[in-house]
Image 1: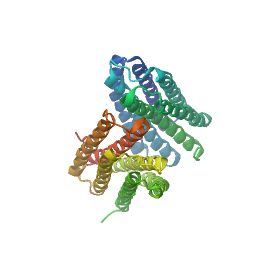
Image 2 (image 1 turned 90 degrees about the horizontal axis):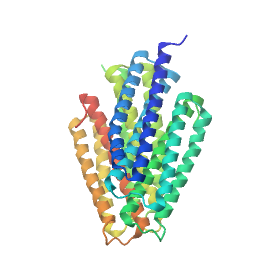
Image 3 (image 1 turned 135 degrees about the horizontal axis):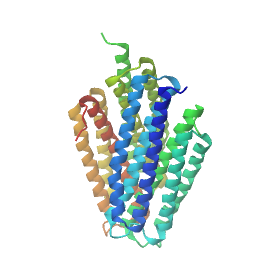
Image 4 (image 1 turned 45 degrees about the horizontal axis):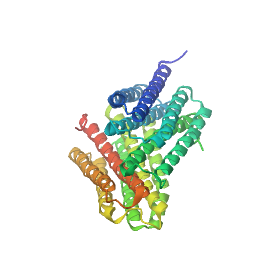
Length: 214
Length: 214
């Protein structure tokens, strides 16, 4: 028979999966907003960030309450502490989607992303969402093979980031410094977003195997 | 008479204060390295980052061990969970000092920072170190007034960051896109570094007062 404690752990895990879905939706919308200069969508992402923060805080409080009431030790305690950390990673991923949306809003009605960089930013957006969905599955299933896959997915993001910077420093770049600054920061936001997904995957891997993913 | 538990909490607090000192030393050196093109110093900061990470992991393990053995509830448990989070903030501040040092190493023997931006980066370095030292005092003393001061110190950093971007987008900027990209990222590293100090200050404020700093 399943214990109340086990049900509580599962609920926490489900809340983290819910958070990945919220964060993934935000990043999808933020990418669309910045590529199609959609101010309404950008505003929607910016407004949603508070909801993500609230949901994370609520999950955090619940985790601390479980620790206080159930007084878990060993692997159960580690799982709960890890859940707190994964919540922080997800909350930060939401912030980064929010940062992307803020660049879209700042430059509206102009396009923040010049035509020759649209395909790279689009690919970064797709990579970000794919990695977040996989992160949700890893949290739900504790699949260590998939956790390792996320490390490789991050290499795709890093590669796109390098390509982005390479376009910015081409002698033919004609969009000026301000656009280059925007794109440098946008590139950084997507890259950091994926880093947090990797961080979650590593935490799950460590929780299951007791070893660090190499 | 003081309890064993109270001593353990004090030791955790002292470890976090030690971490602020390590992080502060790293950022001081990273700023000197980038302003004086000092490769040896940059390498030293890069090497030290592992020590900061190890010290944080060791502190984390100790905190989890205290929770498992002492099974604290209410404010004691909250203090320990907050200590875990402050450790993460400090570890990330160490990463950001490490990022600054990596830009210095990447551009060596050239200067990453052109002459007209030296004073701003120097001021960001000074602000970063001042805010870290104050963060150490806030962790040690739980002084809520000083915690609020850190919010204002962060305004100084944000102001410097705005000045930095303003110089980059001046029509007279003559150092090209690659240098502008470096400076955009450097600005972001200092700004995020200070944000983590603010985050620690807010955590202490909340722990003491039960309210969010406004």
